[in-house]
Image 1 (tube, helix red, strand yellow):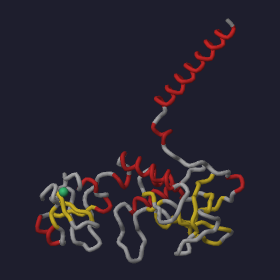
Image 2: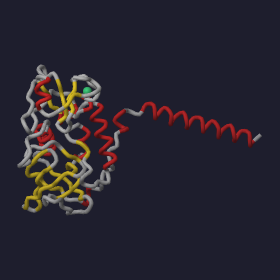
Image 3: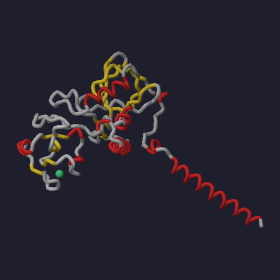
Image 4: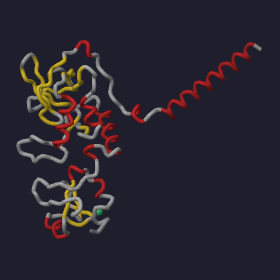
Length: 245
Ligand SMILES: [Zn+2]
């Protein structure tokens, strides 16, 4: 009799636990599924004042009065200040976003892969956390769609960053929102949203009708528009075999 009661109790408990877990999984809000990496212990870290924001993924902090340029690891935002490249689509917006997050603030830096690691431009590579609320700025830029996960510089959080980018893309946030075509570096195509008839990627030799399924895969920052078929052909591109523009 005792054993039977015990088993009833145990099986009831199992049912309750599974039901509870199941309900939690179903009720878990979307944001809880986003992979924000763990927060470090800030008590051992120095909070450096932000001197200025260079662009979306680069800032200058003051270390005992000395300016230190910091490149945020794992994220790449569109160019605004590269000496040889044009301002890319969304570059200004990305720069403004980071400025809004960090202007007048202090930040904690966690070096990646090591404290004080530099990239080939002499910038300190780091994860940047806003003090005092601990916002993980690298991740926040990607989550809000102002930059993409960037694997050229190794990062232990690359998988999380890629998931955040996927989330931003699906939600069409920031950079990933549908936009009219932009002028290419060569100036080969200029058009308004209302004017373009054909589209292409700056990286591709094929042009499409705007509603082609391949056209829809082109990232907004790479999108080029053409006012005429002639213009598209003149750019050196050939028509897509799927949409036959
Ligand atoms: Zn096509």
